[in-house]
Figure 1 (tube, rainbow, N blue to C red):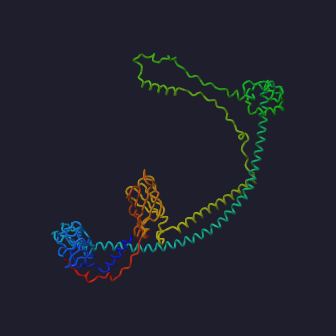
Figure 2 (cartoon, rainbow, N blue to C red):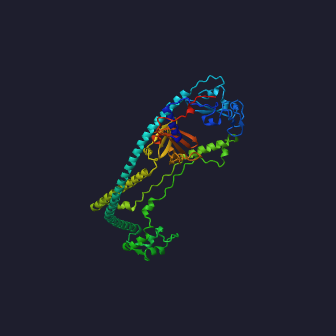
Figure 3 (cartoon, rainbow, N blue to C red):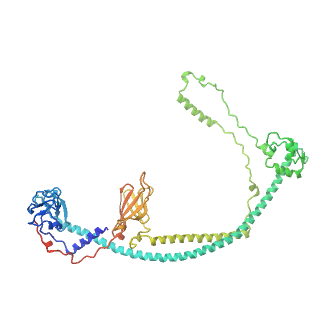
Length: 544
């Protein structure tokens, strides 16, 4: 409720307390009471703009003498003149002089049609009675809203005190939680050290076991290769026998010479199984087993069946009349391609056994022994307790931030708007559902399905300097197509309820929402039971 409207209600209530009577003083027709002093009968009249002075009998003589029209307040002679409707029992008003005696009743007291013959009825008292009744109801709403506002202020103050008390309690509990987190951190780290040592020992034992397995496997492979190379089974691998494996050529330059083979054997002509251990370490990365080579021989793909040979010149098979058009040739080519794709059989691929990794042959790591498992369980329990304490500390920190924000937030001069915090209010229209969450955001969602659009997030109080809490501003919403980001101004109106009453878009991407809340109610000044005083002149009823 604006300050002007509040003052108007005060004046209205003052009038209601004493009643309304027809109050007019002696003055020329069409002159308001505030300008009576300029129109004194018997004295020359000076135009209010000071341009002319004329005899008083030329006032309201239906001839315009003054440029500002002030000499004809009760006639239509001056195009720029104005006529004052006394409207006793209702509100006084001004109308353009051109409407005087035009046959249309503009003044509710009929004074503008004094010489037109129009059948006007004085409706001022009825209009005044209806308006006073309407404003009386508004005054009652304002009064009830203000009483509710006082309750909201009381609840807000109590809520702030409760939050301050809660904040002190939470801050105290935080200190205890910090100590607990640090203590559990020490417990966790203490438990993790023997766990790590035990797991490392277990892993090292497993690595040692795998090394033994790999060594035994390597010895077995070496024995197999020795037997493969020893073609004459004399218990030795000779230079000539080594030459049968060209992949062992040290420089891979093509021919594998006897000299190169002899170097591999350690500059001797042949080696036995003992000496072969040194040779094996040098060739095992290059050596290809004869059995593997045999099984991996390439398989030739089956030949496609071919039909009768076709002449190089396809057109020879047709007469000139039978040669198809260019488009038909393209179609046939496409069909032939499709047919060829369908008839073509992919040559069967040769599947080779997947190479087993060393880990597959070595098996999986055995489970931890009971002692190590107990250490792991103990360390895990310490980790869980530490994580839980850290999570509780984070929650407490969030709670402290929220409490500090609510305590310091600007909820109005006396905190009357605090009850709106964390609440949301909706307005449903034919197309959309609008949602206002005070101090958070405004959104719009299609009524029959679709995604929600952000119409702005809380920005600031945006009312005029003398009533800054009359408007809320929500900014930086979803951007419009090739336009600015959406924003919403919320106009707060005094009322007994808390409800969104209307939403409009006066400018592109700029929304206006009206929101009724008792927190916006203003106090009504007490009314003097004696009412306003009236001078004897105001009680005279006369008209020139």
